[in-house]
Amino acid sequence: DVKVTQSSRYLVKRTGEKVFLECVQDMDHENMFWYRQDPGLGLRLIYFSYDVKMKEKGDIPEGYSVSREKKERFSLILESASTNQTSMYLCASSLFSNEQFFGPGTRLTVL
Amino acid sequence: AQSVSQHNHHVILSEAASLELGCNYSYGGTVNLFWYVQYPGQHLQLLLKYFSGDPLVKGIKGFEAEFIKSKFSFNLRKPSVQWSDTAEYFCAVKDTDKLIFGTGTRLQVFP
Figure: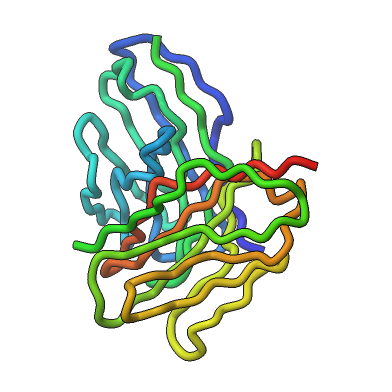
């Protein structure tokens, strides 16, 4: 079974802090994705990556950056957290263009 | 770019009732379509997918979906729901190497 793990289930940070969300997958998938999930808005793609050191902007990249130094790990970075970044963050991975496998999510609260 | 519409935002049913959740995508050609489910407190998981072939797709837990090309639709169905089907359901369409998600339908099933 594919396993996608995220470093924290719950996280509370203060406005202006730098926040790192980590995601690791164990199935040697090429593609990795970061989404945020908000009620009534569904899942919105923040960034994705096709390969190590490669990244592509999704639909809502503003205020976020990403890092993929190793194939299995994809990090989402909030350079200066703001209250409107309070959300559920979901990581996913896929083998080429096939179905995506999701992690459990990190619920981030920015105070 | 593709977009996905889920018109039912919140559906409430009694056990044993039949279910149909609507999903429409914006334009045709070759499409890959997915339904994902998120049970309370759990991660998103794939219910079923359509890539090609038989337009009636069977998924897990008794769910099925029908791809109707002329209507740009991929509606999810289950003949008899159970309390354990209470969850949020997301339709998604593949757009190049990304998935575009609908806003989700929250299903509540009462015993």
